[in-house]
Length: 194
Image (cartoon, rainbow, N blue to C red; front, top):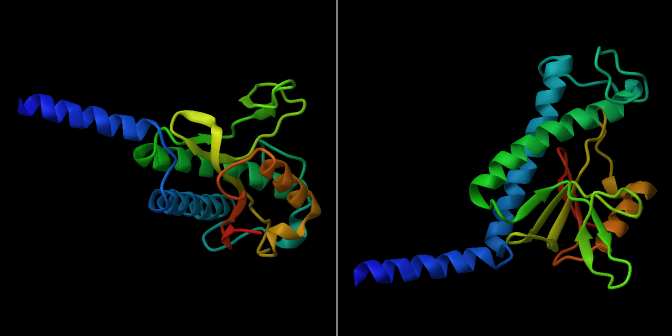
């Protein structure tokens, strides 16, 4: 009899875990993991390339990277790609331990032409690809929150919302829907809401 009660409790708990958004405490914990990973990736990449406590001078951000394997034509984008890769790996490990079914890294979304329903796609034309999405358990098209990672080059710490291209990008993500407004995550300012 006790075994059946335990089984029933496990089924109910499993159902509750399968069908929900993260609550406020869980969302806060997820954001702590995201911020920690963004900071860690920023410092790890900078230290590996430039030495402990050093970073690229802002005057070099638009110059071509002086490395064998160039990921972009300038340092700013090269560093951004490296830092994103390290942050994504860290976020994957951190969130998978606590919320394995409530996040997706770099999902690509588009609206279905006739129904306007949000769907995942591999088609680039007309689609949008945020860096990280918290979503309903096992359903990436029921968006809870969108996080865009930004890694300013050099010691720059300006307002990430100050760039017109970034504001346009975030407006596109807002149009995808969600329970909360899209946010920007930087190593310096952490979570930045408009």
